[in-house]
Amino acid sequence: MIRSVIRGTGSYLPEHIMTNEALTERVDTTDEWIRERTGIRQRHIAAEGETTSDLATHAAKRAIKDAGLEASDIDLIVLATTTPDYTFPATATIVQERLGMHHGAAFDVQAVCSGFIYAIKVVDAMLRTGAAKNALVIGAETFSRLLDWDDRTTCVLFGDGAGAVVMSAEEGEGTNEDRGMLSTLIRSDGRHRELLYVDGGPSKTGTVGHVRMIGNQVFRHAVTDIAAAMKECAAQVGLDMTDVDYCVPHQANQRILDGVGKRLKLRPEQVISTVALHANTSAASVPLALDTAIKDGRIKDGHLVMLEAFGGGFTWGAALFRL
Ligand code: ACO
Image 1 (cartoon, rainbow, N blue to C red):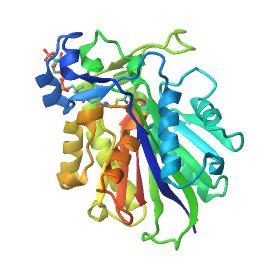
Image 2 (cartoon, rainbow, N blue to C red):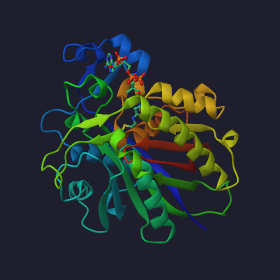
Image 3 (tube, rainbow, N blue to C red):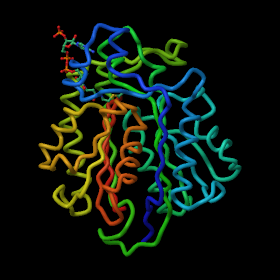
Image 4 (cartoon, helix red, strand yellow):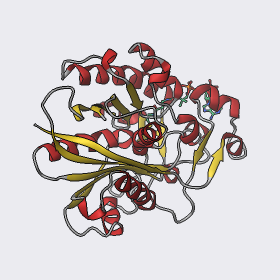
């Protein structure tokens, strides 16, 4: 049985760090409010002229190197983003060109904060059916460009960054002991668009728009839907959450991470958290946190790892793999 195995990871954060303290000079907020309600201490913000493809290319190069491959070995790039360089072409094709790749295929996936999980689902299916051999899956955002810097209810929550993984098709035994993706699940429900959306776009307004969110309502949906998705994702292959070594969640809010962890009876140290340092980097947040926990030695070969995310749409999902 062919499995899609995570072979390397990489990430990149823009140089400039914006602390909570710095935000208090722009909006009526406090470091204390932001820390207590979200756990966020700081976020990285892309420099003027630094684009999503810049961040994505740095992360991609690191992931390819970590996988022990060359860019020429990659035959598929799927990039999850809500903040593309241009309306078209896809940011994935810009990264493809910058990696010096002129073969295979590259395209973007748009599912806001759940984008990386959606991209994993697509790539897993393509690798297992022989459509590609070595894929780059990237989550990259310059989310700061979508923020209304006068709106304290949203601008304190987000940051910029990129994370990438290389996934390769490898032969497995067909059991849950195999390395690679064991189960993936994606969901959406368009009824809740008004709770979390951007108020602009090429077809509707001809503008980029700004993020709008009814945070406390999003919070309630997120905790319930994420917990259910992870349980179902594990159950699809006859496992449950007690089998999981680590959970790498979308980094929106420490209180969401704690709430979901509690519901699923995970120990706090099993839930990887980078939200304090990165804030919510939308599609980049899961691969950024995954790279962090692999590089610092917490997640090791053989561990069973659950990824999850929730975002605008609503969209949400989970993916279970063995490293
Ligand atoms: N500083 C100070 N006060 C603030 C700030 C701020 N930055 N922002 C809001 N407040 C105030 C509000 O105005 C409100 O004041 P009021 O009681 O006088 O009206 C009070 O704080 C409480 O506001 P709530 O929205 O109820 O606060 P809550 O505890 O829910 O925290 C938060 C808000 C952090 C946004 C939380 O709801 C949250 O994290 N929601 C989920 C976000 C999320 O998961 N997003 C998903 C993905 S994002 C994506 O897909 C793009």
